[in-house]
Amino acid sequence: MVLDRELRRLVIKSFHINKVEFNSQNSIKNGYLTVDKSVLNQFVEVEELIEKIEIDIIEPGQHNKFVNSIMDIIPISTKVLGEIGEGVTHTLTGVYVMLTGIDSEGKQMAEFGSSEGILEEQMVFGKAGTPSKEDYIIHIDVILKGGLPFERKLPLTAHKVCDKFIQNLRNILKEIDGRESSESYEYYDKIKPGKKKVVIVKQIAGQGAMSDNNILSEEPSGLVGGKSIIDMENIPIILSPNEYRDGALRAMT
Image (cartoon, rainbow, N blue to C red; front, side, top):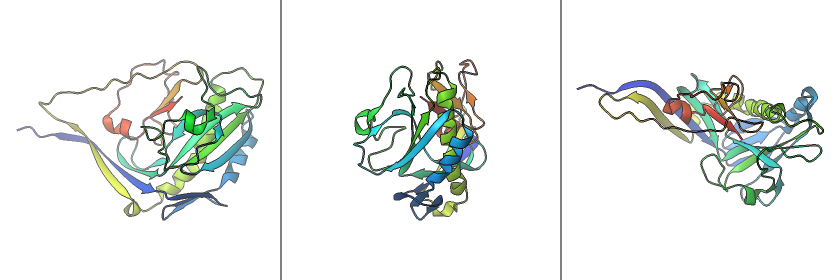
């Protein structure tokens, strides 16, 4: 009898957030997340394409508000041990980051169709990749300078500053004792001799200014260290189940 062979082990530990508020420092403690919004000011000073950045906290059920075009919904997750697809990952539940964008002349950061409008009318809640109606949303709205041709560097700049903001929270999340997690899950990539081999084919967009995807960054659903699907000329990529599960693919659309 040939036994299964384990290739990778991934442990995801989640920490549930019950309350999100602004404060003078970033912290995560006992289900309470505080956010220091002043850190965004430094990004405006160093990024010449940015006019200003606004941030607010959308509480559960408070979705009857106008938002600019939704560029991404991003979980707050970080690697504690190992690389994407293996080791240990810490993630927050009950809260997501939402990135929206526009330029100072009113041009939405969208290409084939913008999604600005009342949030509850523009987002389908509770689906894979979207918050539930009971989750908190940290809303980052990047206003870029107007009068510039629409090209990739504009939305990428917004993604870059948003990722820097999230990294401040990731660094705190790395230091939390895993024994304090709300839930813990183990996943294994295995070779099963004699069993059927299954491949899931996922077709993703890789064209234009907005339809970019970042793959295998340093952090789950992150940006730094990843490769652009467009820059890689849309070549086929093989990911293990655990790499995909651990946020190897960041769809920046």
